[in-house]
Amino acid sequence: MTTGYIHSIETLGTVDNGGIRFVLFLQGCALHCRFCHNPDTWLSKGKPVAVAEIIEQLKDYKPFFDLSGGGLTVSGGEPLLQPGFVKELFIETGELGIHRTLDTSGYCRHGNILEVLPYTDLVIFSIKVIAPEKHKKLTNTGNEEILENLQSAVQSPADLVLCYVLIPTINDTSQDAEDLSHLVRSFPRRIPVQILPYHKLGTIKWRQLGLCDPLEQIPPAAPDDVRSFQNHLVSCGIEIY
Ligand code: SF4
Image (cartoon, rainbow, N blue to C red; front, side, top):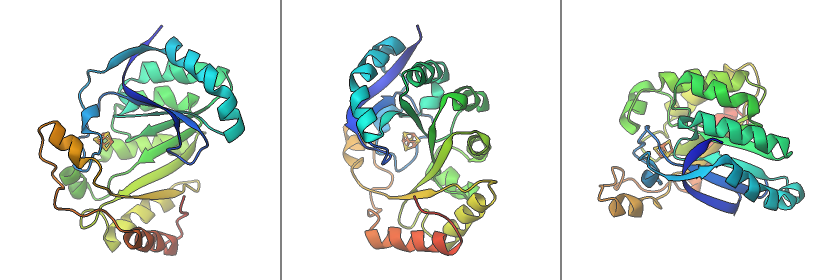
């Protein structure tokens, strides 16, 4: 039985508007986004847990999932750094008739996402920014591998939602909206985009870890900022989630 390394579990969560969710946060992420609100998930040391333990808990929650249209969401950190664990968990979850959501940044080896996609019902794929040089400033790396992995998610039969955290002065310009629209319009199927406002809830965690929040001076995104960015996307023919 495969073991995974987790950060935490949130039962009765509602992270993706998909009914009552059992959310499993896996430990480990190499993207190191400057705006991360969970930097405590970056290190790979987590609590070991067997697939069977999670499956036993999911069985107890199944009546709630059935009533609400919910299910299991695997998030992180980056869940695709543990593809064997997620694959086995998703296979067994599917056998119980429970919906499976993968919440990913797409920053992993290409083989990892290919391993998990066939057993996934919904992918929530988080895109940080499209311009490569901005991506390098905002994270640890460029976004070539991420965009390649996104193409595989687009080609898979799983439902797909793109998620974009809007950060004032960082990824909120008209050019950013146009770059994002251009990418989404290039897909062979219609993919909705969810715009989430940048918030400051992670600052305290950066401090607790003895780290300086690199975006300390950046304000949270206001509802008007989000509306205006969404309106720009809509004017480019993009569906908002
Ligand atoms: S991908 Fe998510 S968990 Fe990883 S650093 Fe970025 S925001 Fe944090």
